[in-house]
Image (cartoon, rainbow, N blue to C red; front, side):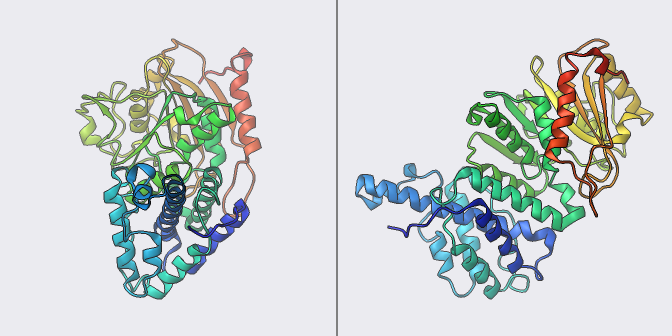
Length: 434
């Protein structure tokens, strides 16, 4: 039997996790904290949960072989690849840890690649004594479900993502969207149980997880949601999968790849379609795949081809094509320039307006996002055409909280903006044409 541990408070857990980052400060750049901390956190959680499942099965069957059977465990931990095996090492710790990661991935098809590609065997970057110090720090607490519930583990993981984003600053824009803005977008889309949700630029999975929280807040069962996302960066894609697992989600699929050039979610020769499509894609990509889109096999250029050196509307077209015909709706964060730039973008914008696809435009304040100080906007579109329907334009450029290096939007401010979107269906004077 394993030693019993008291349940950790969320504050204690968050403090403990952030202290782990301090251990590798110096040899590891702040932008790479996530590459090392998250895999170890996930490994510890998996092994501690495995031990709980083993103890419960042993108490029921009184048979150790039966208690180790794969069907008794959500995630299988092969013999010799447990946390206890790694923590007992005194040399070549990185190599032993990497082998344990690979063994767990091979034993669980759904975990392939989830531990990322950190340089665990590079002793110049992370020497044995420092890695052991990090492992021993995590060894101080039990991260099983009895000590840390799924909800608290998920919140602590999101807390760590936010802290890492603050440290990484400009580089954080590649994987993190301020949660209040994500909440606003999800509230507008209002995902329901049994619906499908897709994020084509999913980062660390925050938007997909916000749909889970939304359904919970509405009293629904989030386990009925189907969540899918695509992410180009290997490390970020792995973190997204860990994030969803640590929140207790099971019906999800995150795939790695370049969404605009090589979309991964297909039905035969068409893009798979979803009820809700949500994203904060990279702003104004210059090398986005213009050459491939001129003969796009998925017909994503129906309303025109985005400019060669700016992929903003390519994301809009990809997301529009990915919506279901009857229930499809989407929310996307884009630079403010998409509202007024001329040329090819103006033609695409006009066609979307002509068919009534654009439902709401929310103009946001500047300096809300990591890595850019330019103002952004949120576009809300629906697949069902609303001929010549008015568009609600909300100017929220003054709705923010001033910060030293970065502005923020509070949850209350985001909820206030959302409140205006609900009024539009009652009071026509809030419906503004663009």
